[in-house]
Amino acid sequence: MVFLDGVGLGKEDSTVNPFFTSDIPTLKMLFGGNPPSQDNARVQSEHSTCIPLDATLGVDGLPQSGTGQTSLFTGLNAAAMIGKHFGPYPYSTLRPLIAQHNILKVLLEAGKKPLFANAFPRRYFDYVVKHPGRMTVPALSCMSCNIPLLRLEDLLKGNAISADITSQGWKQLGHPEVETISPCEAGNRIVSLLQGNDFVLFEYWMTDKAGHSRDFKQAADSLKRLDRMLEGILESLDPAQHLLLISSDHGNLEDLSTKSHTLNHVPLVLWGNNHAEFARHILSPISKPDLTSVVTALKEFFL
Image (cartoon, rainbow, N blue to C red):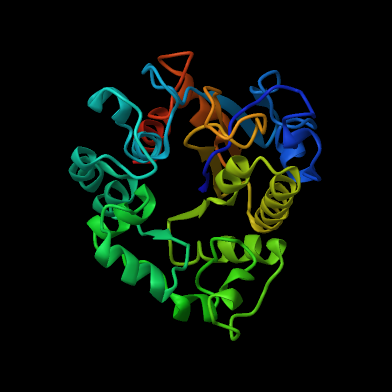
């Protein structure tokens, strides 16, 4: 599963939507040859299905990462439970629910082996000791069920992925020993991590950062890097054996006319083994799925 922070389905407008100005052949292929958009949200092909998910969760206000990620990774409507959208980190009363219901814990209890593939530098661990409330839902999910977060040592061994995909940022953190890799190589590595693991999760937050910047070049760079990583995943993944899921927590990057999040739906991309059947679990019994639908379908379909 590739989790994208801040990626929604926007208008077909190249003046505000970088999906229509960026070099993203892999993403276009996944969406039937066109960039993802409001008018190109549902796509069905031999190997992939794309479905729009409601990020508002029936709650007024702009969707936020804390409640959006909680809903995406637990199947619970976090915004409705606390009566508002909240972020960037999960609301305090949601943390026990994340600990109990997150998909990594569910997989562990079912006898599966999940892996959160992101590597974290030492300064991150020092930071969260002082600020334990400032963890994204994937990291918090790991900590709550004793799945170790990966570190520099794992990255050096090729057993983890840098949050920026290429590992280039680690040199700026004072680690010149970390080798920069291409996005395609990072995609190949993600697939290699399926050896010995049943579920591999990667979190990419540079899309949200680019959206808040309102900078078209930064947005295009983040999308191109993502696209090449997805190319590497698809060239290594066996569609007869593996299923790739791509989704997000809220809209942002798709509309650079504003620094804020958007009310737009977010994409759910399914590629590979049983993608069409999994999509039927998403769409049934409702025709307008939201962020809670992904984990619900995972539980029903695979467990």
